Length: 565
Image (tube, rainbow, N blue to C red; front, top):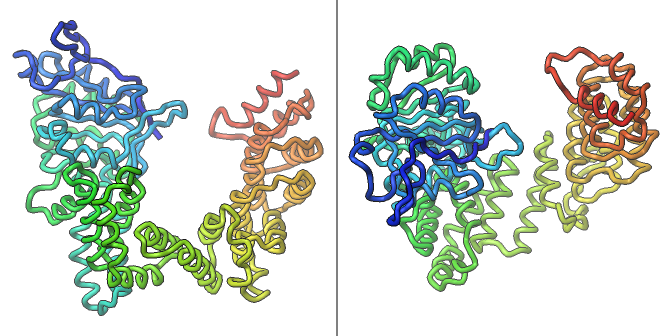
């Protein structure tokens, strides 16, 4: 994930005056010099490498283009700061890794800046930031999947499923689903088109993007061949040609007649600053009164908004009145809970139930009962996944459900299955926990994964138990399962000399590079000083399997052990 570079001021910054201080070449509200007024402003948001930005800067003449880096190192509200300064961007260049839906980020662990998509939506939707994107002609998104057209949640099939739950006939569900899918686009490309409405040219990548140096080299060659198209607001087929085979693509922001403009108006009610807190609550109520398939589409936004209420908001009489109106809407409550109880996944069901609690539709006791019923229904299914075990453990993080085993216990045959046992172990069953220990050192890769999920929530802390499970893992014969099991130990700081020596012996005889890498990772996090010796260094060097990854955990371990000798 890519995070930002330190804030960069524009070259040739004008001197401070008694009237105001110019920050770099930032265009402060209401003021530009005659020369600056003729220049195009290239805004950059650099949350990883500056390669792409520097390619633009080196190639575009300074008498025609001025650069403004929006990221201010050490200031978390840097985008809001750009809005307050009323900067107007003609072009926008965003450089950073992209996670496919939520944020641009840095690959550097120490980097603190990142760009949430929610903040981009807030800037796009808010009157307080009306200038920043108002005159954009071109946007360049240098990150993987920034214009990926693949839908994430709102597929016609998923919407049709939700409509069927709401009571629609199969024919009606299919017809309505197609219309809703067109309106509620949620692909990365859709989101960028929604954030930059009416921007004529948006460049981005439909899949994997090139690394910064490669992208910069391609940009430089493109600029060298001519810059007349840059900033014109017209798609440049030449640019796509210089990124042939690199998935670079181009689209345009939403136009007034686009089917998704209605959806943008809706989510701007959440993201923007046009509504007061009571009005936003009233808007949430109107969304909840819609077909439950549409409510499902807005679930993320409703969750985020209700979680963002400040103490002052909740103490406001107008907000309290608006929330009471939702809490006492019995018809909407009934429709919502019926839909939640029939949701396609336990995770979605729990999310909706927790939101129901936040909206005043469930008491704490009601939520507890609904949660237990969800877990019981999960156990009643023939197939349980690692995600189901993770969900069950997450609902009992404070061990408050440990006394409820009898309400969800299934047959002994089911309890012997690793996945079912994992769920019951999450609810405090000591027998099921013992089953998880056996699964962790077993030969079934799926069972090992179930156990890993369980022990992520309930780590092995007892020294005797940790030594025993280490010995069992060392004796495993399936190397894939063994590598997975070793990853569980990587989260513990092993201090037992006997266990550390057993892992060192396993390193020497293992034919698996994955197993050896996992062992190195465990030792790096453990008290390897207890076994540091010239013999250990020789073992690591002599028996390591070849790796194509260059400097890895084994190399780091060798250097650290050598440093102790």
